[in-house]
Length: 352
Image 1: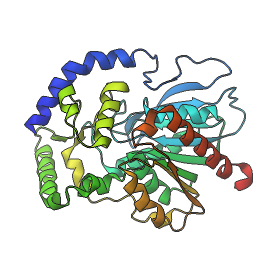
Image 2: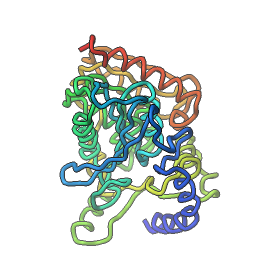
Image 3: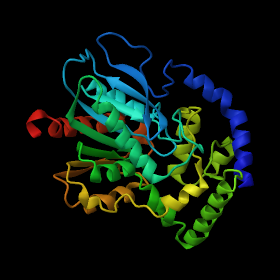
């Protein structure tokens, strides 16, 4: 834990200036390629909004289509961001592309994370992440021009796992899609690629002690990282994590984005599974993943378990890794085209 604290301090000092400069290039803080820099009449616009969810202040961005007319009716899509991510990164990229296709979209920072409120910071409990998605549905359903009978959901990475859980019981969502789905509970329990199965009980004891310390007014204990040096990055052998660190701490860095989470969150995460009760999903389901993604096993595990989906499709992007589906144009375009086709088929007025 001392190492993590030292790493946080050193990385923040080293990277803070670079990160700040990158995010300040865009007036909305967006760090993805082709991001909106100004709202122009007749084009896709972005609208930063804030709303309350269970007493917590949530920061979100709403994207409206070109020539948006608040008196007309549009289908809408909620977009849940990845673990460690925020609304200004890949979630915003997909929100903008789907708005370009005619949808009103919303992506929000999870409670306790990003620009949203909540203490302690970086708490990452699955029940809250699931509630975040329902909260986006609450807000966007009341937004001018939204046809609440044509509401879809998209979840990316960890947001994909939480989206699978949210739509099991929330039938306001008429179609659900995931991109590079990451079942956070399974990975936190068993380790990535089941590499930590032998230490489950030990890590649960650590999480329990962390909560005990918090309850006693002590220092909040964190797991994960909030930056990485070039030397440390070069030693990361797992492609998924190396590309993730490059994305979040180099190419698409933002000061609100971090891989930190409270260690006590593991008490909830390790007892949670996105596929528990997945048979409750009766909406149309699309799951997209890269054929070369090391996380593909999580999508392949979940997909066959959704036995009651009205229809379902597994779409693999040939050659793509997990992180490359976040930003690489050739892969993003394939994913967006597939998503647009899916939502057009299942959020049309004739399909309801």
